[in-house]
Length: 341
Image (cartoon, rainbow, N blue to C red; front, side, top):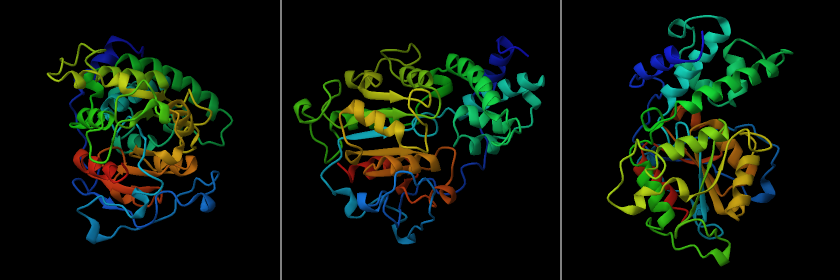
C-alpha cells in the first residue's frame, strides 16, 4: 500500500483517538526520587547506561522538591527537552504512521496491522530504525536487523515529518508558556543570561533551551515550528509577542541522525551543550523514557526530570536512578525546574 492519500486519511481520521491504560497511575503527582539524579563526577562512569532501581517516598508525593543537588554548583543555565511525550502530544501521529509503514512493508492493511498502542509506546524508547525492526519481529542478533530498520526508518521519517501539524503534534497544555517563561527568566530563581558569561546571544534573558529526540532532527524542527506562530499558520498569533517566538528560542536542536550516538548515550546532550556553550553540569534534561534518564547520567548533567504524561508510567520511570523527580503535570514540572535555577 502506498504511503499517500489513503494512509494520510487514516491518520487524520484517528487524530483524536485515545488509548486508555498506557499511562497508568501517577498523573498529578510529582515525586522526589530517593537516589541522586547524577552522582558526583568521581562516582560516575559515562559508559554505564544500565538503570538501577530506586524508590520514592510516599511522604513526598505532593512535591517535586529535590535535595541539596538543586543548588550544587550554582543555578543551571540551560534545560534540554525530549520532544515526543514530553513537549508534544504526538503519540497518535507516531502510532498511525508506524502502522502505515509496517503494513506497507508486509502488504497488509494499516487498520488491522497487529501492533497495539502499548507495544508502540514501549518501542518509543528505541531509535526509529531499531523500533521498527523490532516491530516487524526481528531480533537485534538477526543479520538483517540493521538494514531492515534503516530502510523502514527512512520511509517512516519521510512520511512522519510531512504530517506534522499543530493538530497532530501540538504541545501539551502549558508547555509553550513554560518554555517562554524559562527563556525569559520569569520563573523564580532565573536571572538574565549575559552572553559574555558563557551564554548564547541567540536566546532571551533566562535559561537557554535545547531539544533532543531519538527521532530524526527534521522531525524535531518540524514539531517546534508547528507550535510557533512565526513559522506555522496552524497557530494563531498570541496577544503577547513573547509567546510568538518559541522556535527561535531553542539554541540547539538535535535528533538521532545528527549526533554520534542516540539516547541512551549522552552524545546528543553533550552536542547540545557544546552549541549552547554550557557544560552538562549546568544543564538538566527533561524526558519521558528510561533512555532519557540514562542519557542524562551518561552526559553528566546536573539532573534529569521525568514526566508522566508520555509513553511510560511511574512504575517504569521510578526505577531509573537518573530521574531526580517525576512530574505529573506541567505546573509540577515548572516547580521541579525552579529548584535548579
